[in-house]
Amino acid sequence: MITLHANGTIEGINNNNFNSSLPAGHILQVQQATTKSNYASTGTSYENLLDLNCSITPISSSSLLVFKYHVQYRTYRNGASENFVWIAISDDDGSSYLAENYHRNYDYGGGGTILDIGVSSQHTKTAGSTTTRTYKLYGKRNSSSDANAFELNPANNQNSSGVTIMEIAV
Image 1 (cartoon, rainbow, N blue to C red):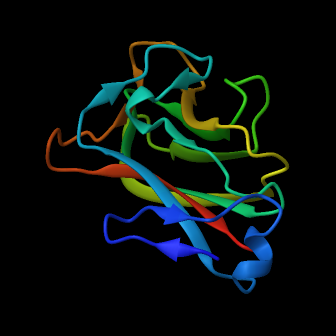
Image 2: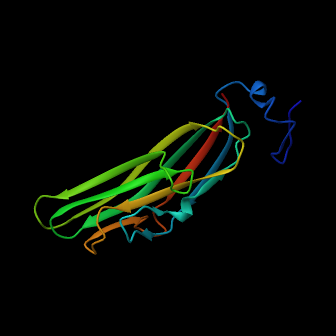
Image 3: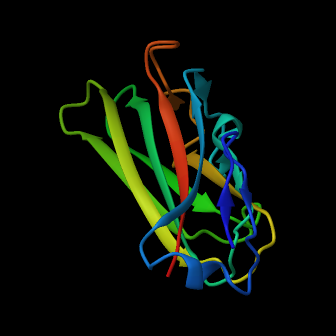
């Protein structure tokens, strides 16, 4: 028997009977991290956006994990040329990336560009185990030139970026 206590804890759940207790599609848990802090990238290799690390311990190995992010960022380039920014999701400390997205701005006139934008994406995968894992968000830019920049939450304490992980019964 499964009991939901007033303090939010659930009693009577184990990996052998959990998915048979709830129909497919039910959200089993939600974890999240948000930040309003400004972060400026300094290099061309992926850098962990530390404030957006988020951990989850799946209740069932057969559950579906849905990772979503929404970030506010600025990218700019002084002078002519183009600027790329990549955002990636990893659950293995950056050894591999579950999803990578890039955004580009290009200056056709030679005067420079600036792009303030909110972007979002998601990745879905089967939990595979009940081991705790930490999802991390990474960012990088295409040039380490001072004329090229990537900033998370450029309007410090006015923008908000975040990640959400949902575990869904299958």
